[in-house]
Image (cartoon, rainbow, N blue to C red; front, side, top):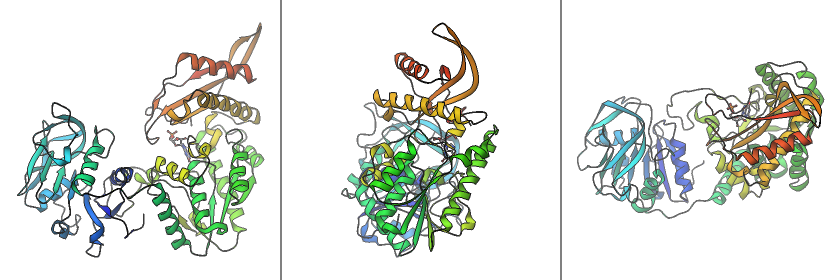
Length: 520
Ligand code: XMP
C-alpha cells in the first residue's frame, strides 16, 4: 500500500513475522488505516503527525542480534502509544532496560493466560474468572521488566505475558492477538487503537479502491497493460481495478482451455466484454489442450503441459499488442506470505510459491500486482465495491489446471463433459440449499474406476463421481464440510439420474493435511 499522508494511521514496524500482514488486516477490518514499514527502513522523515499508534511485529530474530535488529529508537520519544507483539514485546523490554533470555519453557500453540491486573488493553478480553486462551510462538522471553512497567497477565510458564507502562502508553504482549487461535484477539487490537491511541474510523473498501486506483495511475501512466483473465475472483478484481484506473490501456487475455467449469467462458465474456466493455482477447484453445494432454495420466506432467501451453498462448497474443509495458496479476498476500518478505525484513523461508498463471520473466514486462497486500476476503470486498457480479466475486477458488486435476488418469472429451455436468449439479444444489457461502471450496471429480450398478433392471458399469467440500481460512489447511445425509442422497440421485456415465457417488471425508484439496 502506498503511503497516504492524509489519513491518521497505525504504523506497523515489521521485524519479519509471518503474521505482520495479518496485523495490518485486523486494523483495516476494524476500520482504521494502517501502514507497514520494515524495521530497517523506518526513518525520521515519516510524517509523525498522522501516526496515532505504533505496533512492533513479531519476527524470527533474537533481540540481541543488534546488527540485524536495526530500527529507529527515537520512536520511544515520540509520545505515541506503542504495542509490541512477541518479538516486539521483547525488543521494547530490552531497549527500555529490561532483559530477554532463552525461555526455560518455550511456548508454541495454545496457552492459558491469567489476568493479574486490569488494563485498558484487556478490557472485555478475559472471561469472568480472569482467563483466556491465547496463541504463542516463542523461544525467548522477557526475564526482567523494564523500568516503569507492570505485569498485567501471565501464563503458567511465562510470567511476563502482558506488560505495560500506562504512563507512557507502552504495551508488550508475548502472544499473537492477530491470529484466530487467540480467543477475542481482535479486542486487544481494538482496545489499543480506539481506547489507547484514540483513532477514529477512517478506512473502508471504498478508500482502498480509491488508493489502489491512484497507485495504478501513478505507476502505469500512459503505458499499456495486459492481464491474464481466468474468470476467477482475483484476476477479475484486478482487471476491473486496472480498467477503472487506465481504461482502454488495458487488454485482457482469456484462454478457454476446455477444462473450465460449465458455462464459465460464456459468463466471463458476457461480464467483461459485453457489460464492462473491457478490451478482451478470447482464445479458444480447447482442441490444442486436448491434443497435448492426450494419453497423459501423470499429475505433474498434466500440470506442466497446461502451464507451458498457457504461457505460449498468452505470449503469442500479448506480442500482437503494441507498446505493452506492464503485466497485471492477481497475486494475493497468502501467495507471497511463505515465499518472501513483502517489506524487506528477514522472514524464515518456508516454500517457494508456484502458480500455473506464473508468466515467464523473459517477457520483460513489469508486474502490476495491486492485490499483493490483501487477503482473499479483502479482495472479494473490493470486487463488490467495484460492482463486479456476486457470482464472480463470491465464487469458490478454481485451480489454474482446471478440471484436468479433478480427473485422475487420462483426459477425454467424454469424461470432461460428464464431469462438467456433475459439478454443475453439485454446485447448483449447494446454492439452492444455501450451503454455497458456508463452504470455502466444493467440486465434483471423476474417478478413473468403473463399478457395477443396477438401474431399472439392467446392469450398469460406469464411472464413480467423488464430491469434495471443505471449510478453510486460506486453503493451507482444510476440514471437510458436514452435510446432512438427505442432502447427500439428493445430490447423488440427481447426478446419477441425469448424467449418463456415472452410477456411484462418494464423498471425500479427508482433511488437509493429510490430503490436499485437489486430487492431483
Ligand atoms: P491443494 O490441492 O494444494 O490446493 O490443497 C490448495 C488451493 O490451491 C488451489 N490450487 C491451485 N491454484 N494453480 C492455482 O491457481 C494451481 O496450480 C493450483 N493447484 C491447486 C486449489 O484449488 C485450492 O484452492
